[in-house]
Amino acid sequence: MSKHHVTTTINGDPVEYLCEVEQTLLDVLRDDLLMTGSKEGCASGDCGACSVTIDGRLVCSCLVLGVEAEGRRIETIEGMAKGDALHPLQQKFLDHAALQCGVCTPGFLVAAKSLLERNPNPTETEARYWLAGNLCRCTGYDKIIRAVLDAAAEMRRS
Image: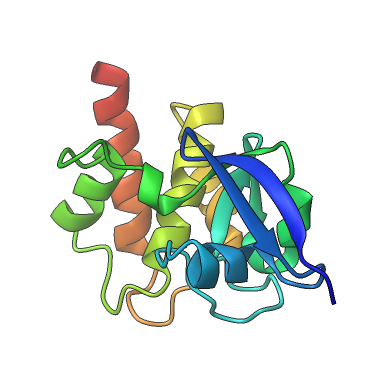
């Protein structure tokens, strides 16, 4: 089987890679590009642990083929912090203890960032609805929602 050459942008940087036609974007990110922040929780798009954005649209990278990234703009958890400065969402997840094992955390953070880019002042119900595609088996969801709403408030003040 021949590999396909893909040129894309990941977290603002131009990236090129070779991948098999059946290889998922999640596998490309983790195995080929060594961007291991996105996690494989289910491989069926049910848990959200592998959430990334493609051209600003929130997707499960386990459901996208690596070849489909050609010419696209991808954002992953690795691009969220700016150097040593955490994104407000990352800081609020720490402040609110909104994580335990950490498998779901990158997906929640990417999804929450996507929410706040579209709606900087979500209600609790809107936040819960937006994050319904992300599952956590450890913490429950209250601390996660509180962290997202607190980050939203801080970001509106900035």
